[in-house]
Amino acid sequence: MKSSALDPAPPAPSPVTAVPPISPEAREAPEAREAQRLAALREYEILDTAPEQAYDDLTLLASRICGTPISTITFVDQDRQWFKSTLGIEARQTSREVSFCAHAIAGRGLMVVPDATKDARFRDNPLVRASRTFGSTRGRRCCRRTGTRWGRSA
Image (cartoon, rainbow, N blue to C red; front, side, top):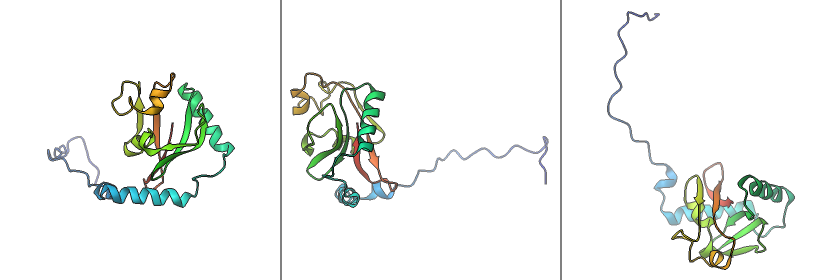
């Protein structure tokens, strides 16, 4: 049956807003999520592999887009962050304790730190204190299609 301009207006929506369900990832204990994340990272068999041009191209592109002298593709392991590709730094890995990436994979979306020397999370970081040029950082977590977080591009 066709509706016409004379039909009554549909009822107003209920004022009660449904609460979205809690995602399975959010229900898990942090330790379980971390174990799952590390297992996913190991499945990729990427840690400690040789440099690859495709990753280096992405690192250079990120540096140019963001206008930064340093860019990395980083995988966060249990006790370290390992750099698959770097631009502007010589290190191939650092301890997870000084990792910006560990913060990025814990968050959602793009992590932006306008000035690491003034950010409480990073101002005492030896990487920040040792650098005369270290200022801002941006990073986005890398995820599997399932949502498991295993690394960061910066």
